[in-house]
Length: 239
Image 1 (cartoon, rainbow, N blue to C red):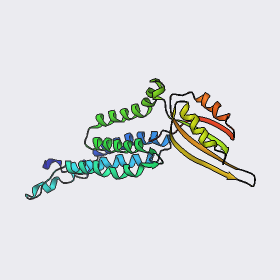
Image 2: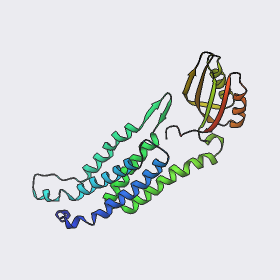
Image 3: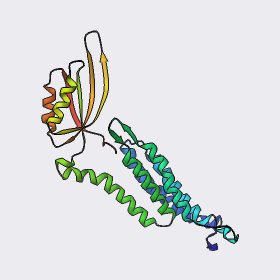
């Protein structure tokens, strides 16, 4: 393995592997950036190129130490530390709001980007490119597949309801949602206003289920005390 010791001039071809890691990790980061996730282009690009550099260092930077008899050299140890160390970044991207866990997919994506960078640094460029393609297949194709599978696979829906506070309206909204075949997966108060005459509030209710959205909006809108109601596709819970 002594022939793995590289000089400054020999390092130039390694820039191809480093550049490939930057390109592939940036492509994944752009997808996350477009979805306004907590980890975007810069984070993914830095993780990918950092993992690639660690791999290159582990492969080529310690070859001269082999001449010392008492030195034990194991390039795979650096790779193992990347796998465990990237968990600190991933853990910081996951947070819990009420009963909803968010950031799991973004954390997993950072983990995949580290693997892509490691593959580039290890010279497995084709494998790294294929993994990048699989990433886009999963994050872009699977949501479409879930919608095709039918009601059980529908994406979460978001119901925004403005109502008069203090009249039990929210309890009626939740009762109607559950009775119409929906499961409440998240509930967040977005705004509360008060004046001399009345208090109003706007809540965002995350729903998942097989019910009719239009029927639910119409039913909730007819409840006493409801000022306005609108439905849309929810930001992916846990994604």
